Length: 316
Picture: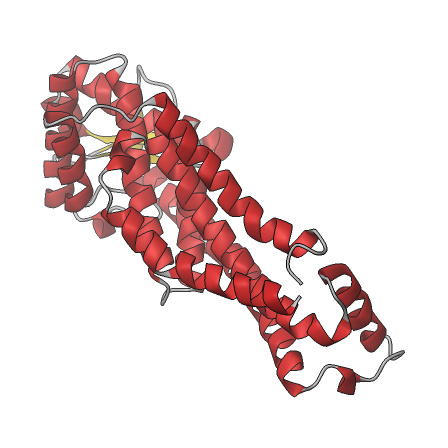
């Protein structure tokens, strides 16, 4: 188990810095957003599992040859059947660090969820005062403001799309349809759950390049996915015009004037620029074979630390 801990430590370091930096600089994710999304999730999960697993395995080295026997030995110490001196100070510290990191990640995940839900409740209360239901569009609220603004507010059966009067006056029916398709895709594909998990990852480990780069990359990828769904029903020119007009509204109306904290997602200039660039100068989609290889690689990446921890004897 000694070598397992060191291998997991090396894998954790690789997934914390060079791998996410390399992926964030690559051009191909925009050509295969689903495969790239799977890979980013795999990097985050495998990285966290490797960090915790490395400390856990190293801490259990004096107690057994594999994770199962090591945990059994640890249980004997906990119930008082074996002396704590068996571990030694360094190994006890490693086990404590693994436990603290695990608790920190789980607590941060819960805390981020609690904060987001609280922000959404406040936002919904604010919308009840500032908006009115759309007459001809279900689950759509209209706010009285001349800046062209559109976004979605997740909430299960209470999910809504929010539009401004300025947007309704500015966009043509086809452009408005493109905006609605884009926002409804965010809701139907549960993109807010991805944003929540990566926001929690960044809050838990803000000093890791993985957390910051992954959050930015995933935010961009979900916009690409929503654009692709909209392009099935509207023309590229229509979508480009709609994106540009909505972006002008985001510049006129800061998110804070409508939203408490970050309850709703309004595109950043960087994201909008990337979306427009992709539509105006499209690159061919990555071939199905290459996308399959990316997904397979992502699954293998996640399976590697899992197998090292659960399968006895892979590394002595």
